[in-house]
Length: 260
Image 1 (cartoon, rainbow, N blue to C red):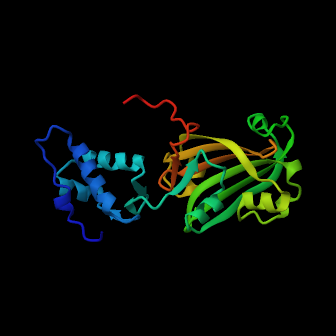
Image 2 (cartoon, one colour):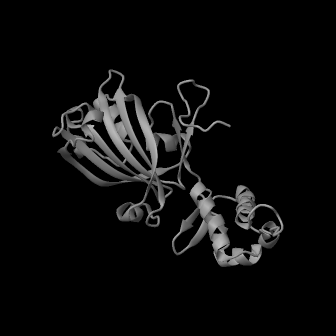
Image 3 (cartoon, rainbow, N blue to C red):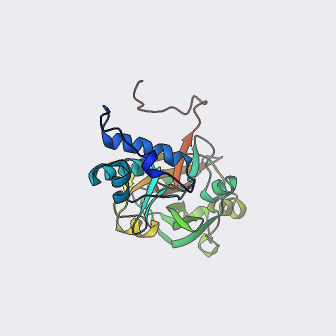
């Protein structure tokens, strides 16, 4: 949708019972639904003219849509409709980033930030069934989608299960490497999801503003034989990561959902 009549599409009704920011937000939502990913939207000052609103009203409408993940603000560039997201299915067999992207027909790349042996800390030990101070492999990588940083993964693996792994190519699928070289496949696990704000380091690595909303997940997986295999923390850009859950299975319950 290249030629948008913004003045017509964003014309508001000052006499309506709903606030102007709400009207503007919902009209923008309708336009966004018709746009391709990464479509530029007008700057705040232009929205003020098109909709006849104050800067605070325009900023609030945009901010709401950014929080929802429909728009993404790029510092020094402007505001755009969100790019295609990474859809991870919860409640299914554990799948890695590379595997997920292959299923979606996307081409991921990976950069290794750190790869080393270290002692197992008290917060990681229970997830791996180890004693505090045991040796683990720590692997931190940045995952990119179409060249754009998407998420930071920090994986912890019991070192006794993966001898020599630091000499391997760690820019591909970790699950693929674990299966091919060590005969280890994650059969089940648990993943928790929360929201955090990007600190200075994460903001720089993920190309987002300081305090930008990120999705934070913590995953533990075990093998078919019940052996703890990994504990991985992910920090994903909210505009590039989407989690879906299959509701047909009674095992997948929405916890804490407000009654309707």
